Image (cartoon, rainbow, N blue to C red; front, side, top):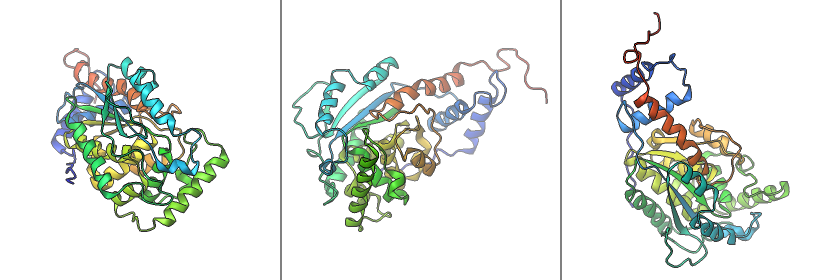
Length: 346
């Protein structure tokens, strides 16, 4: 399996040109705050002082997890396929928010424990009918993990835009994401585990114990081997997102990162290719316990903090208008010269 090589966006000459373009708009220097940083990042990714968004898309990757056998979710596994049906019927939150913002939405069956048959609007990339229970055995074989990553990379090649957001659906996937976070960052399991779909405090403690037991069982999955960690504790949707992220950065797209599970996929991708972070815009800080620490670990600043913990890529859809505003002011806002407005007195 070929892992794309991601090049840093660093370019001193371009950076100075973008700074000059931002600072010459009819506003006090820095007065658009973090929006100016977003505009600079978009310009660096696209290698221009006039970045544009073309045909933004969000991909929702759905899959099931064998770890649900350990009673780590407040909802049954069947909710995964039922929610995929809801996506296809255009009835979920992500459908509403994507439609509101004119954003294409793609639904991918990465490994749901259900036979959908041929369905309009569903992209079938099923690697298997759910991962295995990582409390007892690795979630995936190395071959399954590689296949999921490859599927993710291929999906990106089918897009024709320059902005892509990542979403997910999978009962049990906060448990997989927490295990990945623990192994990738070295943070204690208790700092990585949250309520997921709405566990009680006793349920959260049980979830911690399940992960701790699995980590002891799979002590061979070294923090120095990100693909081993992904195969041992991850999910088909998490592996597919990691592959898609790598391919999107290789194509110099803007990557909109959603919440806890999506960021766990990025932890793996960033270990493989650290420069991928140059291409990532973090849409929000999730209310899922551990996401804030993930963001701090990555040195990331989120655009929004709304107490979200839904997944589906909803944070990406909500952040998209802010990204659009950032590129719009770069392209459409007057300069001091063009508006005949006096600049700052030196």
